[in-house]
Structures are given as structure tokens and as C-alpha cells.
Image (cartoon, rainbow, N blue to C red; front, side, top):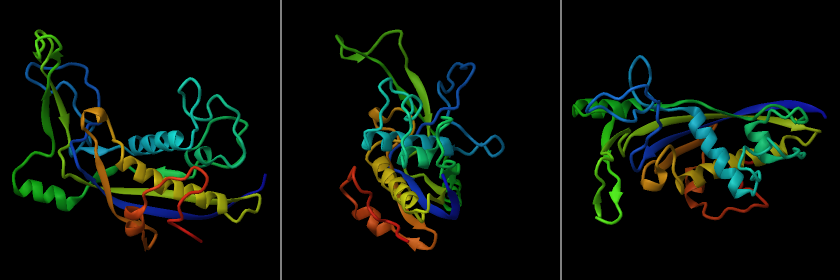
Length: 245
């Protein structure tokens, strides 16, 4: 199989939280009155951020469902089935299967850090960059907080926080296709961003956490925000052409 590198597209956007976001960091112990589930933060600045792995993993999961690429046991697509030529999921996100011969994963997702303008605004108001949300378990018979269970305090990034998102997409020509199939993959990534707006990022999405919105979306020097906002229907047969040659 003949593979030739063509170019790298840069996708940039602003991700705004429409509800609190929680991506946990784990904790060995919990102090009395402390946070039960802290979020991931930069080790030096202690500012919260969104790991690129969380964004990439969610985009992949949503596309797998949208394209009916689901393994029978729920594992990652391509881990059990034999990969087929031109598979959009595997080209975009990668695969460790030794039988795969269509090149490396195309998509790189950077960690998303807080916009400095938002941080400065919060600091001017002497507000914290995170919030603590207390939750309880409801006794189904009494209709009130269950005894001896909770409350538990969850740390999360508050609604309104703005992050800078950057993704790189490497386009290759495979068997002299001129990169056409990879261009389909790039457009599917942008569609997955739209699917993410309709879903949730991070934990506790079914309880209202993790609602996000993308704005100021650019692919290289092209502003595709209007096309992104107007895109409503997802076709399994053909991706929407946000980006053309």
C-alpha cells in the first residue's frame, strides 16, 4: 500500500462550558470536609484544564456510535474485528492491530487550557477557578436524603469557563487517492464536535455536567463557525463538507 504525507490541518476553537465540568484526577484519601472527587489540574499553576485524551476519546466514542462502529463486547472499535480498508474511525483515531496498513492516526488533540482573558476576569472578581458541588443519595421511600450515605462533595469547573482547543489533522494520500478519504475523516472530526455539543464531556453527564459549546472555529485560516452552527443532520453515508480541497 502506497502512503504519502500531504499536509497538516490545524483546527482551533473556543470551548465554553454551559454547565459545570468534571474530569477527575483521583485521590488516595479524603480529609474531613474535603473534596471527595477533585478534578485534574496543572501541577504548577493548579489551574484546571481539559486533557486532550478526554476530548479525543469522547469524539471517537460519539463517532463510533454515529457510524455503527460498535464492537459486540463494547470495546474500542477495531480491537476485535478485522480492520477494513478506508475505515474512517481507524484512520482518524488510530489502531494497534498489526494488520492495519493505512498509516498512523491522523488526529492529534492538545490539552485545552483556560483562556487567559477568562482567568483574568475571574481573578479581578476574586472568584475561584473551580466550584464545589454537594450531592446526596435520595431515599426512594422517604423522598429525602438517605441516612448514612453522603453528602459527597464534587469539584468541577464552573459554567462559563472558556478553553482554547487545538487539534492537528495529518492528511495522507493512500494508494494515490489524493487525500480524499482523509478529507472525509477531517470533516467527520468536525461533525463529532457537533455531536459533542449534543452530548456531554467528562463525568456525570446524565446529571447535567459537561455541556459544552464550540465557537470561533477555524481550520487553518478558514472560519467555519457559521457552517458548523447551521449543521443539523448527520449522514452515515457522506460527511458534511466543512473543508474542501
